[in-house]
Amino acid sequence: MSVTLEEIYETAGMILYQNLDIRTTTLGVNLKDCVDSDFEKFKENVYTRISSLAGRLVVEAKKLERKYGVPIVNKRISITPVSLIMETHCAAEKFLGMAQTLDRAARDAGIDFIGGFGALVQKGMTRSDRMLIDVLPEVLSKTERVCSFLNVGSTVAGLNLDAVNLLGAMLKRTAEISENAVGCAKFVVFANAPEDNPFMAGAFHGVGEGDVALNIGISGPGVVKSVVEKNRDCDLTKLSEIIKRTVFKITRAGELIGRELAAALDIPFGIVDISLASTTAAGDSVANVMEAFGIEKIGAHGSTLAVALLMNAVKKGGAMASGNVGGLSGTFIPVSEDSGMIAAVEAGALGLDKLEALTAVCSVGLDMFAIPGDVPEETINAIIADELVIGIINNKTTGVRVIPVPGKKAGDRVVFGGLLGTAPVMAVNPFSAKEFMRRGGRLPAPITSMRN
Image 1 (cartoon, rainbow, N blue to C red):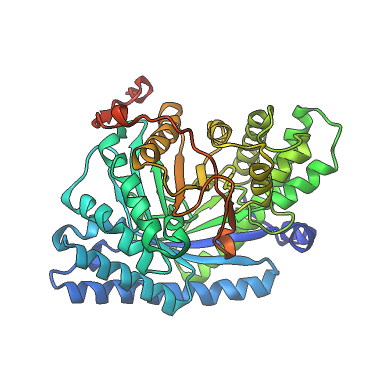
Image 2 (cartoon, rainbow, N blue to C red):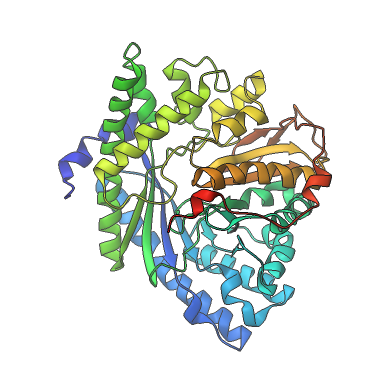
């Protein structure tokens, strides 16, 4: 289906008044052919590959911003999962050296973040995978732009609890040695991770992808909130249709810009991720969309229904607009990055248990939430496992970005700044699952995995 310039101009009011933007352009890059037995040559190959492609991405994205007047907020790179290319250089100092090379390449090219410093460990861990996990605290605290992921579960493989049980200690160590615990914000753990996700911290260039691809992440919670506010009295069927049509327009605009950018770079166009990604800016809150539905504060009873309605309409509108919808494509409900979520937590409307319930119908999971720094590592592991099993059983993506903040207790605040926002520290159930978690092993895949 072709996309016309008229459809772009129709969105002018959305851009000017409702915070519509291209949230990210993410260039996926294969690094497997950069591998060399000489580690210095290997790093040089990686730097050259990334900096040459990234520099062009920044230049061409700025041209399109000027041409259409649509903000392109972030320019990012995602790479082959690093554990796969470090098998023959499996030493802590070399993993850190590679992370610093990636960080320097991104910085020099003007790239905001580079994702893919991670591993796929849903069924087991190699020596390289385990080394990567061990070195993550130093990587996340000593680099500025490098983001990391682990995929520890899937509907086909089940959940690797042995990998999960390494994460609580890793995150607590990362929080201790990174300023304001912000290193933890650059790490996400997934079940059913999509290989074409353009959003950080979970972006990586999947093993099933080509040498290079351009993926676009668009966002428009302010646009959706505006149309919801204009339709206060309609029933849910009509409300869903209104949101669906709005997301259709947003998606068409994003795909036009994405395809034109890919053509300018002479690379394949990948996908449009239609997720509603919030920020702390006024009018850019997913929580406020729910409240426009008629929920007093997100977290109140009825909130899960509201999230489900929004998710369903977003996916239908995007699928109607484009044959290249991918990534996460749904609704982000991060705590620290959404002013409405922050307000709901501080008002006592939203706690960790209800947040987990909401993730059963959203597409991202427990995102950007802070907990007291003295929460035991086994409890952190259990929080992660609870969330990921929702994705495994329901055949959907779920992820966790949890930030244990040293010296903070429930009710305190921690300021990360910029896109990462401000997090109210959330209370955690004080009772333990330590004896259960220490069993380890692998949760068997659900019966729904047997589709052959």
